[in-house]
Image (tube, rainbow, N blue to C red; front, top):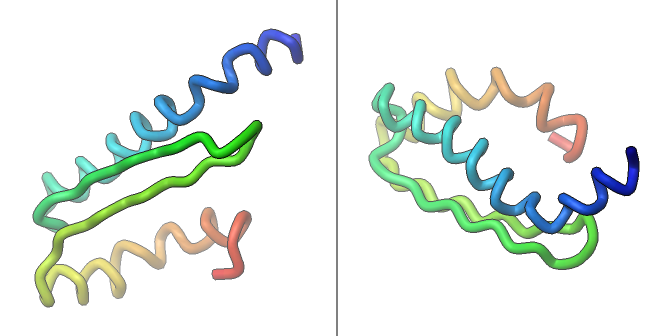
Length: 82
């Protein structure tokens, strides 16, 4: 079972971009951001670089940091010191 999972590991950047794009597209549809760009690069086995460019204005930025981001802080806190 582990060998099968490791065989698909090089496809992870595509999956990461897909699922991140789905979430960010929802933010765009709700009006939290104006536009976005996502790039994921595989640096090595199980090491990835994710670049997320968000285009926002001042009001959207305030709303995003006050209302949207705190909902995700617990999830992000598992991997980062947030």
